[in-house]
Amino acid sequence: MLSFEDMPSEQAIQQETHAMLGRIQEAISTYFSASASFGVSGIRSGYKNLPALYADAGKALRRKFLSDIGQLHRPGQLADLSGARSRIARLREAEPLRALLSPIKQKEYESYLQSIEASLTEDRKAIEAQLFHFLQWVGTSLYDDGQNEKTLLMNVTGQLEAADTLVEMLDCVSVYFAEIVEETRNRLHMSSDITKAIQYIKRHYKENISLQAVADHVNLSFSYLSFLFKKGAADYVHRLFEPIPDRTREGADGRDADEVVRHRGRSGLFAGIYVLQQGV
Image 1 (cartoon, rainbow, N blue to C red):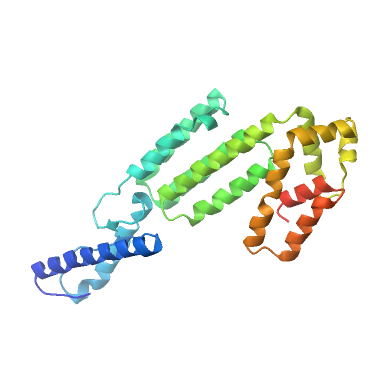
Image 2 (tube, rainbow, N blue to C red):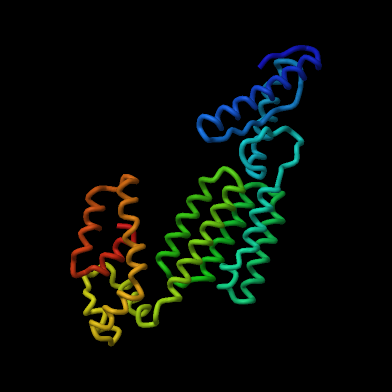
């Protein structure tokens, strides 16, 4: 914000500014466990150049998306892609996920990663579009009309839209892949009878159905189906109820939370589970 007519003075100001910004970053990190990124312009003597210098600094700061947080960005400086490349390499080595894909889809998975890696020199919107297509493809490759997986996809989409940097976005993708692998494995480990029963419940979750009605539909005895649910779906049911305390802490409407909890003692327990799953 200060201007001198000679270049050495301008250079001295810039050096002092860099040191000051470094102290600001250190203080923010120490006291708030956060980071600060700055765009720093070049040198052009005179107050008349301040608007152009401000524009240069803003353009440099946009490089933060590729380079990650907590850095000083200068005009003409190349973006540091090491963080993004290491995350892509981690996705490439995601064996639990790749093991669930067919050989043909594994090749498609690799093609998506190569395409994302090649797009690192493009603008943010182009990179984001690549990531969203990738997520959607992985999701549809691993499940068919699974409500839990759809919820996970919606959650990660919101996280990507709120992310500041590509590194943060790729970390969100890694977490999403781990979650969807767990969901897929849990579904695969269920018996075919349990799967049929759950599909029936999902189609009728708005109704106050009983376990007896489900047993009649899948041609099993009530006691046997009850045993199967107790054996094979206990963890599944537990996971569906887990979000209740979290939702109340997040400020969900108290009446909604009460309504969900009441389903625990009703005859329509499994209908209530799917009401919860739908986000009541």
